[in-house]
Length: 627
Image (cartoon, rainbow, N blue to C red):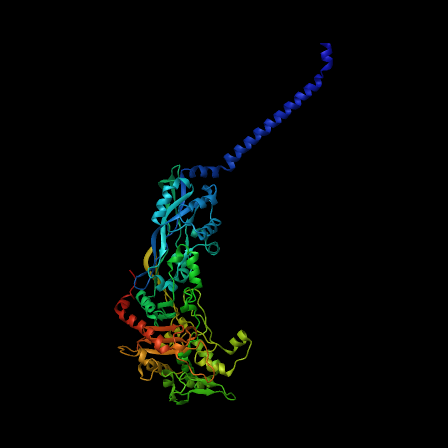
């Protein structure tokens, strides 16, 4: 024993035992401390989160999107409606593998690449616990197919809702516009809280301009669910606020009549009330089906629209810039009278052309043999170019620009619709800024007959016609007549905005010009008498216009229209208002490459005015407040 005791180091063993005990105690202490800290973290700091998660196992908060307001014409005809539809939604936090889920979903319902892209755009802006739509407007067959396989898709649900529908289709597409899926770019420009649960936003036309009125405010509800996520009962409801219903100044019957009147031509028709500035119809042709865009247009359909050489997506009525041709001669005549450049009764010789001093170039009349001796009234209804050439030399470009601008040429009208073009009312300053060149006298001659640099939209021509009809008084063109809020069924009017009146030195000058426009239609030698003035039981004041697309050589005779390739044919224009004594409608028509203004555009204007007058009893009744 003494030998064993001599071998053992009891002090070392005790130290080793103490060290081991301390290590084990420290490890156990750290583990206990970690456990306590974790419990404290879960029970104190993350209490609210896990309480919510536990509640979510049986209760869910669902966003209720607002019902979009409807759009009506002046008589209560629906222009934009909401129809029942089903959409497929995914709650990201409930899906383990999103890409795999999308791939498997594509085997049950059709999911295009555009659907995926739109879904990911929305997903990046939406909390994970909220549903994001992947497909809209499912068919009944697709709904049934998904319901059979519902168990294989946790976090994916079908929800009933509404989708936008446009009863007039392509007839009013450029006017009413359309809604489309909300993109990431859209979300950067709107209040995201207001668009929770919403899938659509206005993209063009009335839908875009009045998005803030049409789109309401979302609500929410708390529902109790079972283990599979099915709703058992509703625990709480905060109802959404629907969007406002809009009433337009437009008449659906006249809109359809104008669309039909254009026939197979490309072009535009704008009809408006001279008394109020309200648009009665606005047609651009060719057009497109707005329903295609509501739930996401396919690549093939969109490619077909954008590659079409006739450009159906282009709103010619507001964006098309055309040389107005002789339709501006009434304004130029007023400029001549107001500046005392020429008396109304003075006869001017029209031999069929004019030359500038020091130049041999001939500025020709549309009628190569000339019109003979004509005064201002005759120059308007026979459309003598030479008369207005000579008038332009006395007026100068400064006066032409000033009076054109007074009638809204060269500036946007300010209509309550998006993406309006301004056109060009040329001036010395404009050319110096745009071309860095001085103004030349020959350009003044082109301007007075609505050619050269000058361009105008059909909407601007309709406003110009309205101002002539009302002898300088008028209102800003507009389409909104009023609205009804969902919380208050009373009709709220949108008062028109008056334009600054055009005050002439002598109000008799209005009558001179209007008499010339009446003779365009009614006088035997008027340019539109044969095409517009037959069998009239009311009075029309009009003016034809033909704007060149391709020029002719100095001594080249104008070829027959049938011998000219269509894209090189002249544009046909016509402006008119009626009845002359108490104007109720002003119309501007542009037919691209149509040829003669009187023979092609004139009859279209006549059809539109006839359609308006045929609906007069109904239109008179429509001035009452919508009920």
